[in-house]
Amino acid sequence: MIIRPIVDSPEPETLFRRLASRPWVLWLDSADPRPGTGDWSFLAADPFGVLKATRGRATWTGADGSTRTSCGGLALLAELLSELAADLEIDDEARAFPFRGGAGGFLAYELGLEVERLPEPRLRDLDLPDLELAFYDWVVGWNHRTGECSVLSTGLPLSGRTARKRAEERAEQVVAWIRGGPAPGNPRGGRLARNRSGYLSSDFRSPERHRDGAGLQSSFTRRDYEAAVRDSIEKIRAGDIFQVNLAQRFRAPGPSDSADLYCELRRRAPAPFGAWFAGSSCTIASASPERFIRLTAGGELEARPIKGTRPRGATRKLDRRLAEELMASDKDRSENLMIADLMRNDLSRIARPGTVRAAELFRMESFTTVHHLVSIIRGEVMPGTGPVDLLRALFPCGSVTGAPKIRAMEVITELEPVARGPCYGSIGWIGADGQVDLSVAIRTIVLTGGEAFFHAGGAVVADSDPESEYRETLDKARALAGALSFEI
Image (tube, rainbow, N blue to C red; front, top):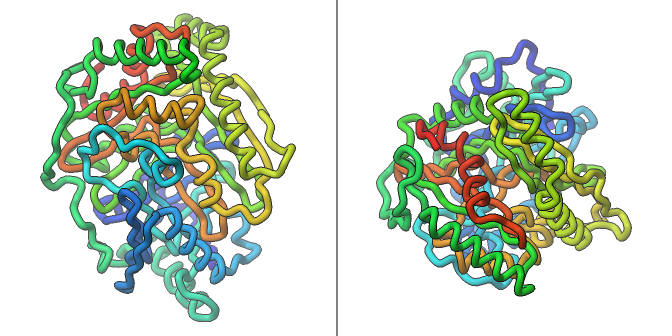
């Protein structure tokens, strides 16, 4: 493993622009650096393999032309990570660099069907994977606390002396590229060329029928969404569930330049867990403020579930009033506490007994377009627990399902007219060394077939007001719609 410091490094967006047309570019972008959540940004490309899974069928394709298949994406992911961990050599110099090579990309919400026995969505209208992870041997990292930039090169998937030689060669290529030379690897992905561009035509069958805002279409009419909220409230009052996260999906024409879209999104809604991933059949642009799960080299677990939202005010006085209203809201605090308890329960499945705790409840965090209540749940992982064990215990995040989790997911399938796909799944990295940092894929746009899709939702509880719940979805959708040149 090689670390090369970069003095006077370009800004992350500058380097991203030089790679954006290539397949499987990953930019994990802390555009809103905050202590504990936005410490690092990472940029990677030219992977040595790609793992895809759709409806329980998984395929690994290596840059060398090798292929493997499996009956489950998580099972094959566990095999691949185990093999890489056996070959990985970590120098002391690299220990301060969190993402030391490995997998990066997205886990779609429907990957949860691999974890639990759940009904299929009413309609899967987009032909997208349930999991797509590219495996990277080099990563450029920016430490926002120190202002330093460096290149980490692992030599994966090789081992021993050949890995060291490959790591040195790749590090030299990346440094030369940063200094203005050609980018490493094949610009078309070589043997990993995309199956289909995110901007080719598709056989899209749209359930969207309602226009909301200036040209956006939604999977719900306002009346139908409010009716679904009322249906959810009836289930809650009957004791069927305690809370359910109900979302509508928006559709719009795709942008002419997807990289421009992401850069506009990060300008409008900078987030600690911003992300761009150019996959085989879709491109993802995310401005997520929410950490799903982090697992550190020291075995520390952290989740930061978000529940409770108010829009930002147009004046300081109004903005302060809205923030104070959120902090004082019994309803929003109840929503947040339910999900914090759900996350504590889920973490307890893979944490050492007695270590799971709420480090903080109802923390106010303000972003460009909304105020949120955030809780911080921490624990210590049980020895021998790997990243896939983590996913099997936690995925999808309870903040986008409700409680109890499995029944809430069944209700979502009953009420939402279309599959969620990458939205409300997760985006981030899973290190070859076993570390993990994944966001919840909220405030996320999926670009495929010349179209743009994004979800916006909120938690329904017993005292929810259907009209207010609908307005909350629009508050959350506003920045995404604006990045696509639409107004809500």
